[in-house]
Image 1 (cartoon, one colour):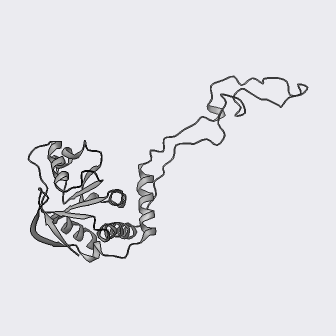
Image 2: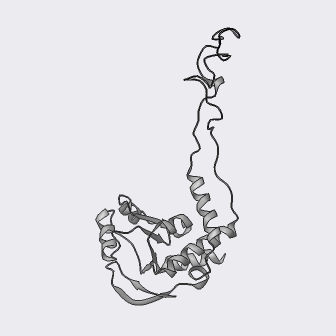
Length: 209
């Protein structure tokens, strides 16, 4: 699949780049995408939720009333889960939600996500993205020139670029990552995928391993 290369002004440079079929033209595997996205979201969970059981509640352990003869239920202490302020039965406890996936499955998922973006013609390729200074208006000018200011965008650079990253950080609908950090969730969450000619080569080399 050939795509026209654009400059920072959003105009065609006259050059074209070939998106490798091995990365952008595979048959998408929806189940692999589901598993990879599920793992990504699970890994974001802190898992620090906690409620107190009856043995952790601060309160008296005296028996509230005698066992028999009151006409009511038996009651051991005020910390019983049946009373207001008592412990919670089977409440949430700290846990780790992360789980592992095979490397090959994750590659299939990312290729599938990139292939979906290619099928939908939602990939734009730039010759190079680099800013001399850290200014949000530089990145705003870029997305305005590309007519994607109102859409969620993911810019994939061949390597981490501090000026570009910090210039985009204050914008809600934009995200900038290095090709080595590409993940299925970010690709699918973005409406438009912005690549550079070098990042296309970097992705091809990464998926060839």
